[in-house]
Amino acid sequence: MKTNYNVCITSGGTSEPIDTVRRITNTSTGRLGSKIADAFIEAGANVYYVYAKGSALPTLACRQYEVDTVDSVSEVLTLLFDSVSFDVMIHAMAISDYEVDTISSLDAMSTSIHALLAQTPKPSQEEIKQALRDSKEPTRSKISSANKNLVLTLKQTPKVINQLKAKQPNVFLVGFKLLSNTNLESLKNAAFSQINQAGSDLVVANRLEDIHHSEHIAYFIDTTGLIHQAHTKEEIASSLVQILYKKSKESI
Image 1: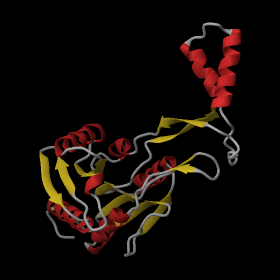
Image 2 (image 1 turned 90 degrees about the horizontal axis):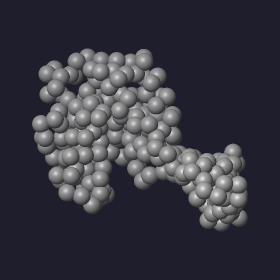
Image 3 (image 1 turned 90 degrees about the vertical axis):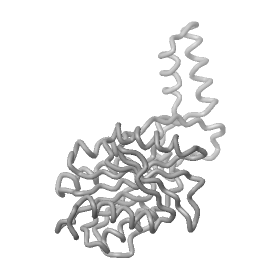
Image 4 (image 1 turned 60 degrees about the horizontal axis):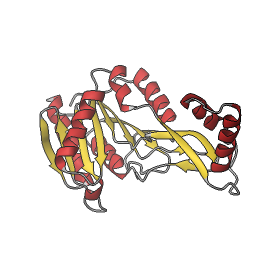
């Protein structure tokens, strides 16, 4: 690989606030991302490590950036992509697919609908939706635990990985795909879908049931199909370095 080989790695799992003390999150630990970072640092790359708060960190020194929400990830990556020309982007972070849209309760919702029906015997679908939105609870502070039957509506967050190639078209983009209770063919199809939508050059695909403390089976998939398989986090990390080493046709 060339001198001044710049690698950006995202790791861990983001979270989205419900109120000032509660959050929606996922189970990602960031251990795989930290091992990938260490492998590239050992190989001599300049690593920029974007990690979710509380996730695992590399043991070796590198530039580190803490994030929590999807918006904060986008902000940090925009700043980095505007200031650094990256050779590789490894997007190993488990990004929240949804964030809270509204919070209400069955009591508040039924009251709002009852009031609507009193005014409009045959309301439209949009009028019903608006009435439900109007029943939402304020979320500027902690929601009282006295509230019963809370109802949360969620909305999709922006797909961060889909924005990366637009920022730097020549970056080698490595995406990750995690499914559960599925077969290899479905996993490959999900990887191909990411390649088509995000422009990923390589997808590391895995199934939740294949991830254990000492074992982590992963399938490396590009436009040609399955090109490699690894069985531990350490193998995944070293395999990525080897694959990128071949791509660069130079030693670091």
